[in-house]
Length: 34
Image (cartoon, rainbow, N blue to C red; front, side, top):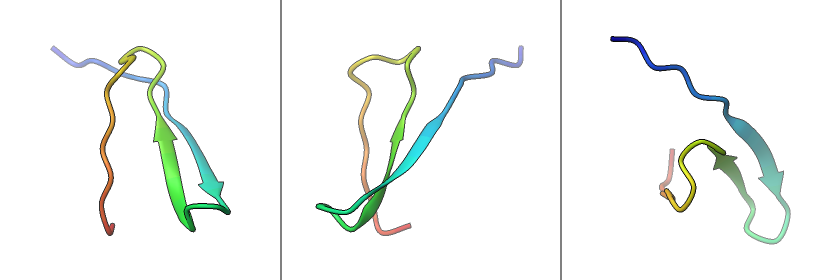
C-alpha cells in the first residue's frame, strides 16, 4: 500500500533551518542536521 502525504516546506529565519509540516500527521515533529 502506498500512502502519499502533502508536505509544506519553508525556511525559518529565526531557527536558520527548514521546517516541514505534514497536515495529515498532526503532532508529528522531527528535526535534524539534514
